Image 1 (spheres, one colour):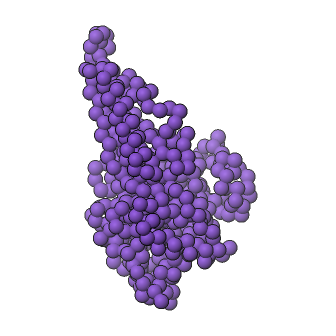
Image 2: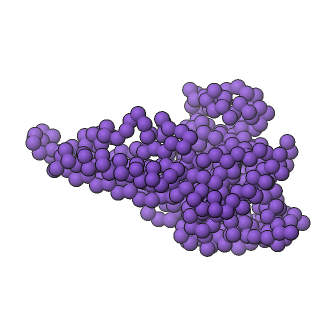
Image 3: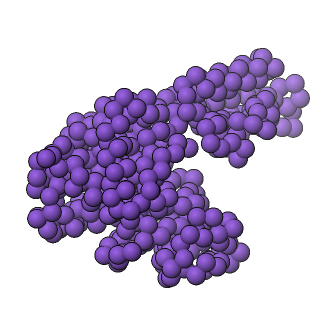
Length: 412
């Protein structure tokens, strides 16, 4: 196992992870949070410094750049997202490198009761001798997807430093707001200008993914009748009580994330806010097939209608909007980008594995918009929480696969 890229990848991830760039679905600007531009400006500066061409930050907050061709071939895009998930604290990230993992328990300086071990995260047990990066216990790490950012920056630096390496024109994109489903602005496909592309946003070594969830988001707003609690008899209609009733009308023993896996979809309530006067419930709906997704939307609407029928003085509004669709619907018509990534893995001695993503990527939207875009592993594990970790050596394997892929895309 070569250590050619290990130091650079570690340095980059530690530097990037310490920058707060969390997205916010309630933000109305693009990007949704101004702090994502801190990452964008840093990457634009670094790209210019390593000699990339056409470096720009777009109006919608994406960083674009070109690694000029040294050989003929299709234009290949590579993408990673700069935002971190709003699901857990991402402010004050303190990355920690655990050298030469010995197979035991990893502890966290800022959360003494937190434990990471192969019992908790089985994949960790296969990383003996690896350098493992975590956060300090009170935040997520942000390897999702700053590991992808580090990999693509390392690949670009390597190719720009040695023009003798044959590869076609490569287009890089570092997008905002992927975690809230807004990573692909409608202008991005044309601005990227790639014949096909890859997101670096996957997990275990060898993963080449071309199938994702189809996804919708839903917001239910319940408006009750406000009244002084001391004089509320016969007047008050408590929106929070109605919200609780709605939750109880929905499946609790099935169709929820904690009880589903494989190809099973779910209906996930992830946030409730409000007062006795008005409450809001936010859901995500997920399924691999469109009819299953539609059925989950119908189930939520039926529950809302049933709730409204119990209390005519209240209003219950349910809005469902599309987020992304299973990229398999398009990629299965032409598996060339998938086959190329699999071949690159094999050329590096890595067995490729294609499993359905129980989530989505920028590639889901890009593929739907006409740019075929499967997903490649980075090594990230236990994402969106304090146990998030990644192996430096796994990132290095992803870097080598990307370099191999770029070389194999050369015509002739």
